[in-house]
Image 1 (cartoon, rainbow, N blue to C red):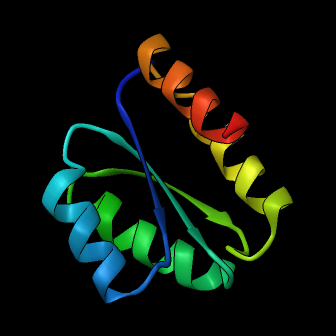
Image 2 (image 1 turned 180 degrees about the horizontal axis):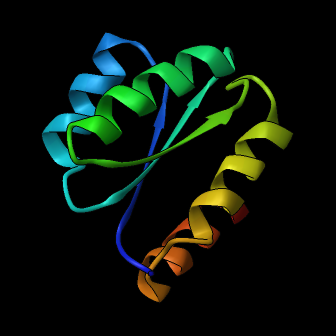
Length: 90
């Protein structure tokens, strides 16, 4: 199912708070350098009714950033996918 997607980097308390505030009804792709952190926060949020997909990523790695964007595009509405593509090209 395609819907709006939100990418969150950093699976800590602040990232979770932001995702909870604006992510309900959206697919949330949650990236963190430590996959265990991402999985833990994803489980908490999924149990609370959110739709969260954990992903391991290092924000200092362009390759990881492009990978999380590609993962998010799998769930995107076409309009959102085009916006993400423009951001990648910038």
